[in-house]
Image (cartoon, rainbow, N blue to C red; front, side, top):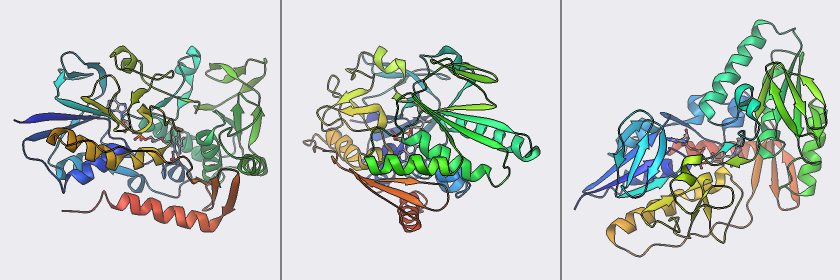
Length: 373
Ligand SMILES: Cc1cc2nc3c(=O)[nH]c(=O)nc-3n(C[C@H](O)[C@H](O)[C@H](O)COP(=O)(O)OP(=O)(O)OC[C@H]3O[C@@H](n4cnc5c(N)ncnc54)[C@H](O)[C@@H]3O)c2cc1C
């Protein structure tokens, strides 16, 4: 009997799943992808694109093409609700789409809702298309008048915020010496999840590049031309980017799926919802029970293959295969100048050689999506 499998979101895990589906198509399965964008950004190369080291095409996966090669259907739309009783997904622009099995890989967005004015005037790092549109616009404004002094603020001093600051600085210095980047971090230290060497090295590097660090400063209001911190500190700003802790959309919690304390879908080691076995999830939106990990692209990439295998196995009535995410992983942070920092536990290393290595890995990853059948 034919079955409808619905993929929601074209994140890294689903891109890999679709790529593998091309060679392992199952008859009588209708595979469909709903994505709010046709071009899915690859997180590993996105900071490099911001720095001007990669083009848009080099850093984006063409989802329409990928679904076509997998003999799947592509719907460009935004999922806004999940009806678990009727087994259908609610979309912003079309009637509900029914499914037999559903898989979610919709990523996460920086937490912005707690500060209403930030929602109005700050630009979250995700969704990426909106972030990039604002970044290109800012670059154009700077190019038009490079001598005007401007303040660019980044709120959030985790890996994302620090990487953006370094990559934006490299791109901006090509056009202007009049822009000051300010990085705001609520805690007293940047990158609390990284080891001591990396934290210290990055803090020195940011300062060497002229990036102003505001540690222990929690931004609590954003206005069109200024931001205000809890301490009362004020800064006139021309643009504010928001890169705080990852969060999940409200409709996930409202669906009735079992979630973790931050609103992400709780899945078992088969990447299957702990409450609803016909629902699978991977990437940032999923938290694996007993194996929580940071929300990072490296895990979304690793989960692509087990997600693909388990979705196929569940359809074929075969036992599912457990997936255990690695505990320690190498994180590579690009510094925007064709150099990168490797961080492994408490150890770290900064070198152009690491950039070349990272560049090769990232290009190989992207190459799999452009091969023709
Ligand atoms: C500034 C920044 C820099 C980062 N740099 C790195 C890095 O260098 N290395 C790294 O490993 N990680 C990095 N990360 C983290 C990384 O971006 C995420 O962990 C990774 O993208 C998660 O992949 P994913 O597959 O879960 O989702 P995503 O890559 O976020 O993809 C989700 C997709 O689903 C779509 N979507 C979302 N909601 C819906 C909906 N309702 N309906 C339909 N489609 C939807 C989105 O448009 C998107 O295409 C960075 C994050 C930020 C914010």
